[in-house]
Image (cartoon, rainbow, N blue to C red; front, side, top):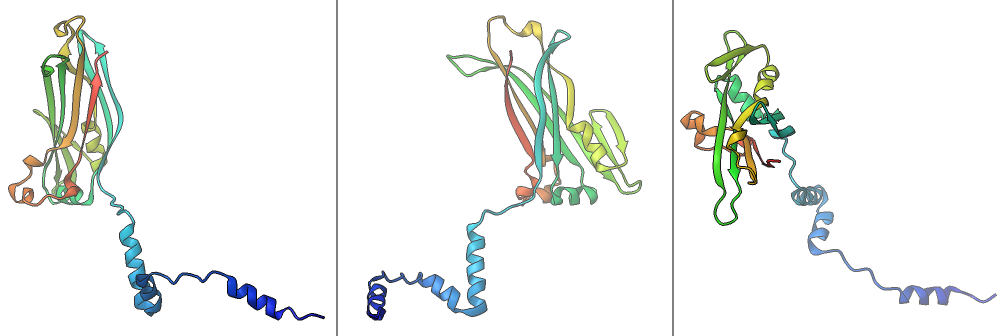
Length: 209
């Protein structure tokens, strides 16, 4: 029987050599627990940060022609961040603004603004009664929970923007809509260093059909 060992050794010697790992990776693997910690931290920095913050989830936004006027229907689901809820429970009132502006398209110049309407809600917590109060203009109503109080301010129905007879036949119009938390009405000390936790709002552009 012919011995096969020399052939096996020859095949092994012809295989390409594996490239050594990068210097930083060798240090991570060779440093024991400290090396593993450095490697994990490096991988964490490469991953996008996930921040659970406030948001405005738009459920409904449409224009309608009814009762001789152009009206707006708006509905959203609001999610407040921890910093905002904490401020509410500490007795800081918050103001929410909704604004709709009607423009007539002009190709030769800036679009002309023909109407603008806005609403401002004031939301506050009442510590003595452990209730919530929502105010709009001269109207005010109390609620037992925060979720109940946020319902009316996140839903608008039949909001009159402009009378239909003020829209010129043959012209094109569009509406710029925005809803946001008005941080300018917060107490002055709180406005000095507001972070991303206080950015709450949404903007949309609608074509008038």
